[in-house]
Amino acid sequence: MSKDKVDCKNLSLTELENLFSGWGEPPFRATQLLQWIYKKKVHHFNEMSNFSYELRQKLSAFAYLSSLKTKKIQTSSDGTQKFLFELEDGETIETVLMPHRGRNTVCISTQVGCRMKCKFCLTAKQGLIRHLKVSEILNQLLEVQLSLRVASCAPWQSNRITNVVMMGMGEPLDNFTNVISALELMTHPHGLELAPRRITVSTVGLAHKIAEFGKKTNVNLALSLNASSNEVRTSLMPMNKAYPIERLLEEIRSLYKNNKKRKIMLEYILMDGITDSDEDAYRLVKLLKGFPFKINLIPFNSHSDLTYREPPLERIDRFQEILKTHDIFSFIRWSKGRDVSAACGQLRSLHPTQS
Ligand code: SF4
Image (cartoon, rainbow, N blue to C red; front, side, top):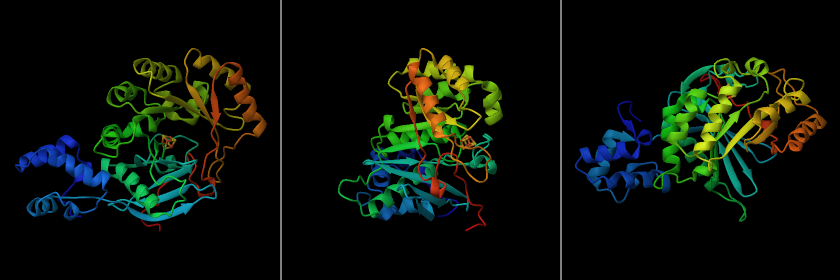
C-alpha cells in the first residue's frame, strides 16, 4: 500500500464511475470492479480477468485494495468468535461472529474507541481515537466471510454472513457519513447484497441524526434505552443530557410512522438495583404506550473492570412479566461470548504497543 494511492473500497459506485470515465473507460467498469471486490472477493487488480492488461496496470498505479490484518481470533464455548483486527495505522478494533441455528450474525465496529462515555461499557474507557473509514467497516465483513469459507462447516451450517449488527465499538451515528456509505455498499446488488432487513444499526440516541438516518437508509434501528427515567439514564449515559428520553422516543416514533416496514427495537440493559425495579418496568410501560416496539432485555455482563452486576434471575423474569401483562413484547437476550469478553459492552482495542 502506498500513502499516495486511493483505496477503491472507500469509493462509492458513482465515484468509481467518475474515475473510469476520466480514463475514457465505460461506466460499467465500476460495476465490474465492485463485483470483483464484493462478490468474487479478490485482493489484487491483476486477478480481474475482464479488465485489459493496460487497465489493470493503470489501476495498480493509482489505487489499491485494503485489507485488515487478523491479530487474534478467540472462540467462546458457545461458538462465538471474537476477531482482533489491525488497521493500516496500527490501531486495532474488535469484531464478533455469532453463529446460531444456521445464521451467522456479525457485530461490527464503526469507530476506534468511542466518545459517548456510557458508564457500563469498556469501549468508553478508551475515549474516541478515530472514526473508521468506509473500507475498514466493510473489510470486517470481508475478513469474517473469508474465515467462514475457510472453516470446515458441517453441511447444515451456513458459511455465509446472514445478519449484520452495528453494535461493536463506537457510536455508528457519530460516524454518520462513513456508516451510510458503508451501508450503501453492504446492501447494493453489486456490493455485498445483504437485505436491509438483516442489518441493524444501534445507537445510544443521537436524536438529531435519526430523521436523516431514516431518509438515507432502510436498515433497522436499535435504540439503547437502558433506563426508564432521565435521572438514571443521564447517570449511565451522559449523552442523555443533550437528548432526553422524551425527545428520543419522539424521533423514533416519527421514524416508525414514516416507514412501518423498518424494524425498530429498544435495548434495555438490566442492572442489579439500578434499572431492574418494578417501578422501572411500569415507567417503561407508560413511556412505550401505543407503539409496537419490541424490547430486548439484556442482563448486564458483569466484568471485573466495572462495578455493575447482573440481576438475579427472578428479578429478570419479574421485569419481563410486568411488560407482558401490559402487552409489551420483550425478549431476554443473553449475551454471547462472555468467556472471551465478546459480549455487549466488552469490546475494546489493544494499544498499538500491546500484542
Ligand atoms: S455503549 Fe456504545 S455508544 Fe456507549 S460508550 Fe460503549 S461503544 Fe460507545
